[in-house]
Length: 82
Image 1 (tube, helix red, strand yellow):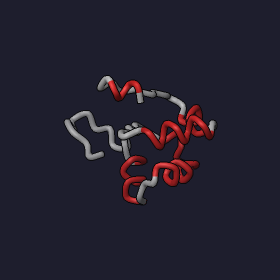
Image 2: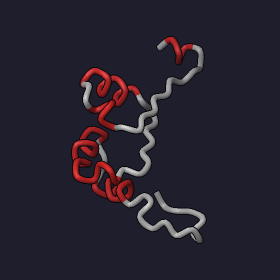
Image 3: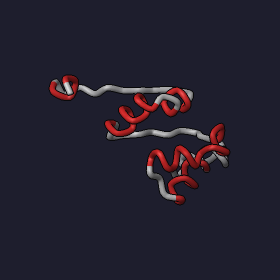
Image 4: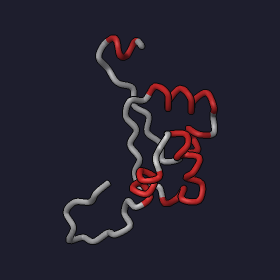
């Protein structure tokens, strides 16, 4: 609350989703208070993405879009739908 009072933003970045998901206190605090969540390539979690989907409240369409990131790495394509 103090950070927001001064128009600041707290940022959490991790390469391991388990760092956040494994701790109930951290998970609830970060997920519930984060206005913006950015997910990059999640192929590493494809077999356990259902827990991430339910945690973030993602639809099946959103899950499919996230898991399709970097699936067709054609260097000629300038943009990709995410």
